[in-house]
Each structure stands twice: as C-alpha cells, then as structure tokens.
Image (cartoon, rainbow, N blue to C red):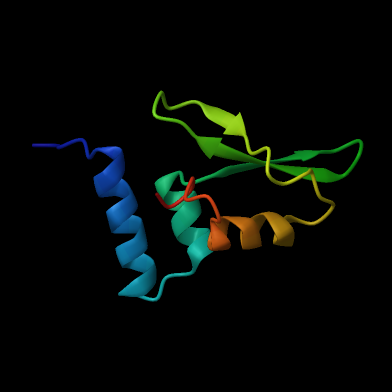
Length: 86
C-alpha cells in the first residue's frame, strides 16, 4: 500500500537524509522537490523558484537571477526565510 506523505513529512525526510546520512544538499533538494531552478539561455541567467502548498512553483523574489547556479544553491542551503526546508 502506497502512502502519500505530506509536505512536513517530506521535508523531515529530506533534512534527515542530509543530517543523518550525509547526503549532499543539492541532491536531496532535487529529489524531494525543495526547489526548482531554470536557466534563461539567451541571457545565461539562473532563476530560483520555491514550491507552494498548491504544488506550483513561484519565483523566489529575494534573489535576482544570477549567471552561476552556485549562488542559487547557496541560497537553498542557507534558506534565510525557511521557504525551502520549512
């Protein structure tokens, strides 16, 4: 029997994977749908999106599009407003 996990349980499992198992944050973030990134190919800029409760992703307004994905990954890791990891 499959059981659908709620958002809180999913986030808990994601944090557990990082803290207990030592999994890389970027790998866990992708696996659990913590964030989404997109590249604007013409401008070569990366934009960060966060997941809402309605399962839609919204542009993360606290960080301007950036030419390298490293800044986005650092923002997800720091999560200053607790929007990615809860």
